[in-house]
View 1 (cartoon, rainbow, N blue to C red):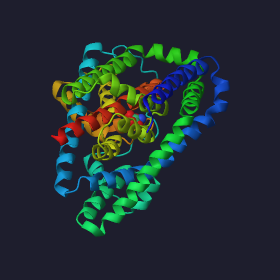
View 2: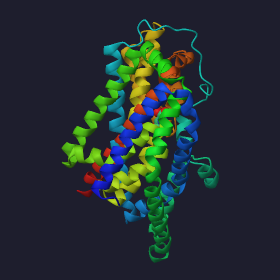
View 3: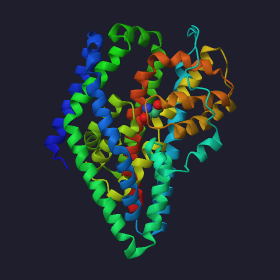
View 4: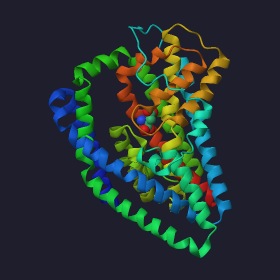
Length: 402
Ligand code: ASP
C-alpha cells in the first residue's frame, strides 16, 4: 500500500501528464503519434492483469463472505445500488437533453451508421451473455461477465466444502496479492503511459485545430453530456457523504489515479486494477471491494447510461422527431439495459446504443452524427463509470456492515 505523500505525488504527476499530453497533442499531434506505443504498453500491461485479478478478487471476495446467504445480502445491496444509480443517471440525461435541446438545428451532413451498429442486442442476448460454454475461451476473449458469474458460483461452491475448500481460497488470496503488487509496479509507469495515450489520441484525430472545430460544431451536445455527468458526480458525492459519512475530498484523492487512468484509457476494465488499489487505500473492506468492483466495472456504467439518453434525444431532435413522454420512458429503460450490456472497453456504449434507437424507432445512421467527438466523451463517461463503481464499493460496504 502507498502512503499518503506518495499517493499525492503520483496524483500530481498524473494531472501533469494529462495536461501536458493535451498540450503536446494539441500543438504537435502528428509527432505525438510516434509515442503511441508507450500508451499502448501501459494499456496492455493493465489489461494483462484483468483476467487473473477478476478471477482472484471475485473468488476471494465471495469466499470471504463466509455463509452463502451473506452473498445474497451483498449481491442484493450491490444490484440495488447499480440499478438506482443507473436510473438516476439516465433520468439526468433525459432532463438535460430536454432542457438544452442540443440536437435542434444540428446538421445531418450525410450521417452513416458505424460498423457493428447492426448487431442484435436485445434483452435475451443480455441474459445469455451471463454464461459461456467455455470459461477459458470467455477469459481469453475478455468476456468478463460470464467469467464473474462462473467465479461467484465457484466460490459459493467452495464455501460449502469447509476445510477441503480452504486451500483453494488461500491459493487465490495469494494470486490476488501478487497481482495487486504488480499493479503498484505498473503505476510507476502510469504518468508516461497517460501522457502518451492522450497526446497520441489527440494527434490521431487530427490535432488541436481539428478537435476544436469538431467540438465547436457539436458544442451544445458536448456541454449537455458533460454537465449531466458533473451533476451525476455531485449526486454520487452527496450519497457517499450522506450514507457513509466519509470525507468526499479524501475519497476523491484516493481515487484520483484511477479516475485519471479511466479518462486516459476510456476503459473501465483496463482501469479496474487501479480502481481496486484506490478503493483499498480509501479503507473499504476487502470483501466489498473484491465483489462490488469487478461486477461494477462490467455492468454498472452510470456515465454510459447518461450519455446514451442524451445521445438518443440529440439524434431525435436532429431528425426533427418528437419523442413522447412514454417513448422517453422507453429510452429510460432501454438505455439502462444498453449500459449494462456495454463492455468496459472504449466506445462500447456507441454500439449498444442501437438497443435504444431501435426501441424508439430512430434511424441508426444517427449514431454517425456523434462520431467526431465520441472519443472525447467516451473518456468523460468512463471516468464517471469508474467513480460510480468506487462510490458503490464504499456505500455497499457501509450498508452491508450494518
Ligand atoms: N468506454 C466505456 C467504459 O469502458 C464504455 C462506453 O461507454 O463506451 O466504461
